[in-house]
Length: 105
Image 1 (tube, rainbow, N blue to C red):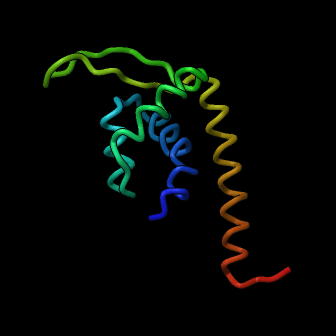
Image 2 (image 1 turned 90 degrees about the horizontal axis):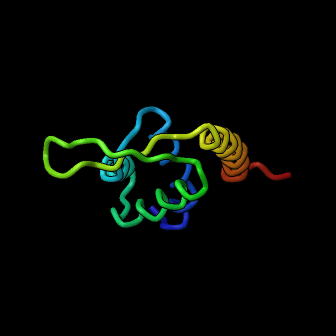
């Protein structure tokens, strides 16, 4: 899949995953990677930016397999941003489907 297409939807995917259940970075990466291939290092800058923008909060939780894990959970502002991104995605998707469906204006 084209890298530019993936970059455009990663924020939406990350917020969507974390809105369902708090998750740690590697778990978020695995959720996305099983649907389309990305580098693990792609996720962490996105997560840091979302924390800075107050779309995500973090907390540590003990792990049965090593050191504590940093979990990410969506904030109220993050939920609003997710709603906005979903609306934008649906409009964008409708327009692209219209164009590639062979319709001309």
